[in-house]
Amino acid sequence: MAIPVTLEVFEGPLDLLLYLIEKNKVDIYDIPIVTITDQYMAYIKAMEDRDMNIMSEFLVMAATLIDIKCRMLLPKEVNEEGEEEDPRDELVQKLLEYKMVRFLSVELKDRQLESGFNLYHKKNIPPEVASHEEPIDYDALIGDLNLAALNDIFQSILKRQEDKIDPVRSSFGNIEKEEIDISLKATYIEAYTREHKRFSFRSLLEKQGSKAELIVTFLVVLEMIRIGKVTIEQKENFSDIIITNNDDNNERIDLAQIG
Amino acid sequence: MNKKKATATLEAILFAMGDSVDISRLASVIEEDVETTRKYLEEMTEKYNKGNGGIMLAWYDNAVQLCTKPEFYDDLIKIATAPKRYSLTDSVIETLSIVAYKQPVTRAEIERIRGVNCDHAINRLLELDLICELGRLDAPGKPILFGTTEQFLKSFGVRSVDELPHPDTLVVEEFKQQAEEEVQLSLDI
Amino acid sequence: MNKKKATATLEAILFAMGDSVDISRLASVIEEDVETTRKYLEEMTEKYNKGNGGIMLAWYDNAVQLCTKPEFYDDLIKIATAPKRYSLTDSVIETLSIVAYKQPVTRAEIERIRGVNCDHAINRLLELDLICELGRLDAPGKPILFGTTEQFLKSFGVRSVDELPHPDTLVVEEFKQQAEEEVQLSLDI
Image (tube, rainbow over all chains, first blue to last red; front, side):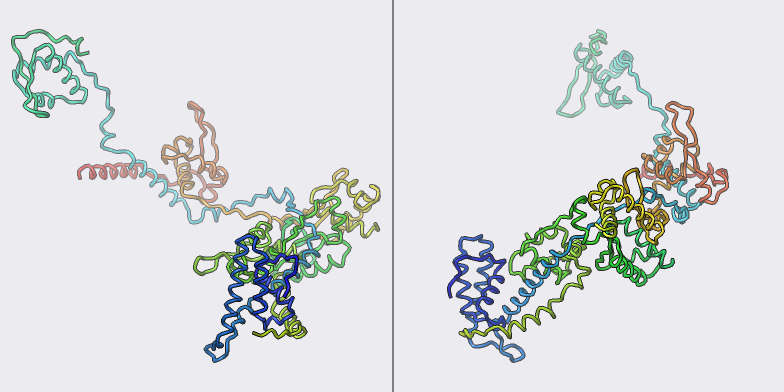
């Protein structure tokens, strides 16, 4: 069978198949598979330069046709009810379904041409209606809420507020900034040194109250070492430091050095 | 509400709303049951069609909408903007007819019937608001189900999806006749 | 164009346009002079007014517009405006209880008690007419003082604010003790 010179554009493999069946004027229920397959393959060859995605769909159909062609050469299969199965049945069903779709498409196209000549308008709500505010239904709004419930809620808020405050610390009262008098501290440490002669640095620190006092004490001790009023010794890293008073040196601590 | 007042109310509401309104919603406003409301609307439709006015009632499944009568289209577009008319390609129309007759239908089913990938056509139809997603099929992968829209009914002048000619009766009948007339070529293997 | 067709065309145009349309523009579409068009429109107006429909013609100087007859506004409200669902959230109720028991009270005081910003809740209560501004506190910034409204009393079945049950100081003391004990407990562990 000759191939038409101009290739029609087919919507898909079923479209082409249907075209071939119609062209051959054969009953859709009795497709001459060999003829149709040959023609189908000839079309695909002629279409070779087309999009691969589209081509693959046509090739699947060609493969299906060849599959049917093969199965028709074999002895007929028998189904559960003992009836002979025609390998073409599935294809026939598919084609019939597709043919219906095409029929409906034509129907829809006609309808589209005849319709759509009505004009609609957009919402046209009078401003009086649009601005209408429904009165609040207070019964529904308040629901089960009553005075007692409101009271409970208020009390639970108060309780929550109390919980937020730490009662122990809040009872300490105000914490004021401590002023450390360096000269007082120096006098104290000098007296301590004279009294104890030889003592542990740690025991001196333990007698200090705040962090600021610790720092000042450390600075005073450093200054005393610098002017040779005391000497220190430490057996190993991080062990206690022993401070010894050097009695013979009576130089006073220069407070300006510590400043 | 008496019939006269109900009819006027229906007209007032439909005019103001512009869009289509569900018959059940209209029924609740005029405080009648859906059947009575439907009857009133049918009578209004007839009155509009027979009357000398320029407007009519369009029906979509379970909703109605006021619109101008088609015979005034040519005069109207002299002054009003004409509604867009789309020309749909064959592949888009084919896909649309599958959705129209098989709805709710999945993409896979559409593609099985057409034998080709339908992504483009489906997207185009969604874009034109001719089809919409109806939900998801309770099956592996939860595929989306498509159906036609009110815009579809409007564009194709169909009052309801049920009004479309049913393929099983009409078309199969035609095919059978064709088959009888067609020459049988015995091209057996 | 004969009068019957002209009238129908005018109705169709006015329907499709929605807005008001100049009579001169209408005249050009029906191919009549302005005087004749005006006469047609006047007759239409009369027909609408006397008729049993839901729509009418409104006149503005040299323009006309189709619109809903005002007597159907109440029915239109039923369908055109979404019924607002009013409800009170926890934060709104809390704020209301503070205003009720602490009034007159400033925004800052409410926020101190709740420990969070209360702008939204206060605005909501003002909107619902459950609280109102009572005046301004004689303090820096002249903050607004809030109190409960007549509507609040009515809704809660109270005749006067004095009737509100006050949380007695004992209860507050009890809370303080409880809180102290709880903290002490956690310190001991």
